[in-house]
Length: 213
Image 1 (cartoon, rainbow, N blue to C red):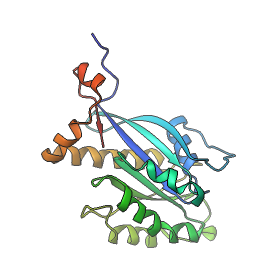
Image 2: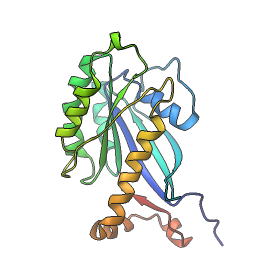
Image 3: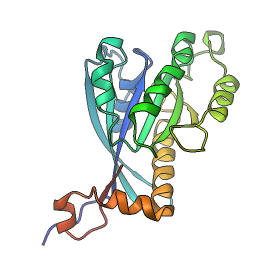
């Protein structure tokens, strides 16, 4: 008899945004609970996984793909949008350009991601002094509120994080995962489509584990 896995669902996440906004640091903080002091630019794709537990007690395994922000790797990055249930679109609160490039990244999400993907706008490096800020919380929050993600009629989720201190890192991943699961459970037609993606080995083990994409 197959051993029941320690999670109920598997969710694919991608982290996107300009280079040097702290995407790799967010991934390392989530998966290893440490701050990545010296981080070279991601070349292509990096991967990590983490299990979050919702208030309902359900355990979700997040498979997180950290993508390169440089234009030269954009074609590689786009190939990883497929099948992603969750997306973190990251900018640096101290670098105005990274926020002004958010619409371009959001366009890629709309064009390349799954129709019902859940997206969070994430302002990283929130631990920096107010004098270093180039993007206010209020401005980013307003942008998220008036912009829909993908083809759903819902605004972007919004969080400010610090990979250095750990502020809101687990919280943003958990919030996106919870939104995905809520949508999955409340939409029977979509659920039937999603269940068709269950890995055959998982189906054979007769458990609730499935890939929500």
